[in-house]
Each structure stands twice: as C-alpha cells, then as structure tokens.
Length: 138
Image 1 (tube, helix red, strand yellow):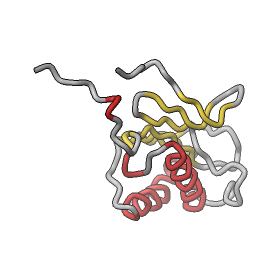
Image 2 (cartoon, one colour; image 1 turned 180 degrees about the horizontal axis):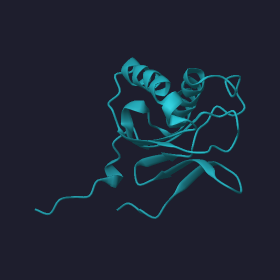
Image 3 (tube, rainbow, N blue to C red; image 1 turned 90 degrees about the vertical axis):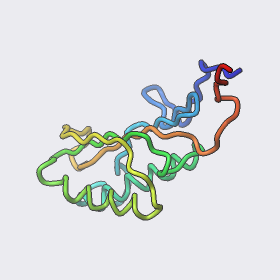
C-alpha cells in the first residue's frame, strides 16, 4: 500500500522548492524568465523561456507537457500581453501534440520589474505506478 504522506522536494531553499512530487503528481513553483537573456525581452520571448523551463523541470520530475493537469499564468499586463502569450502557449502545446490543461490566466504585479509572465503547473507523472492504484471493491 502506498504511503500518501511521502512528499519529495527538489531544488529547495529556505523559501520554496522548484519541484514537489506527491501521490503521482508533480507540482512546479512559478517559473519566470528571471536570470535569462530574455528576462527583459517581450512577452513572446519570455513565454518561450518560461515554457522551456517548465519542460526541463517536468522532464526531471518524470513528466512532460502532455501530462499537465492545470496551469496558472500570471501576466503583468493582461491587456497588452494576453494574445502574445497565447500564441506561444498554443504553439508549445501543438508542438508535442499535448492536450490542453485546465488553465487560469490573471493579471498580477510580478516580483521583478522586467518580468511579464510567470507560470505554475501541476502535472501527472509519466509512468503509471502500480503502487498508487487503489483496488476496487469486488
């Protein structure tokens, strides 16, 4: 029987963990373009960088974009950036024939002035783990 209380945290510091795995789910902390060449670029470049980071972290955690269940997207200026972000998002999903997750997009004051977009996602792990299956009553 699975211990559903076990939580794995990766890339942790005093404030957050970049990846948290629990009961077959993968939770990513908010991803931005901070620290990259696109950190002060436009919405398309920042969105592409954020999605590349999401891909890398999901792969490390044993998942991928086709397994994303939900995404929360924060835009600094939703009126100016919603269409540009969506164009990159839609191409990213189509690239690997990913399915569309449940998604929320809101406007938010982001932590660093140049940042235009932040995303956090929850995904299912790739492999079906027999130890997570709950037997049905017969």
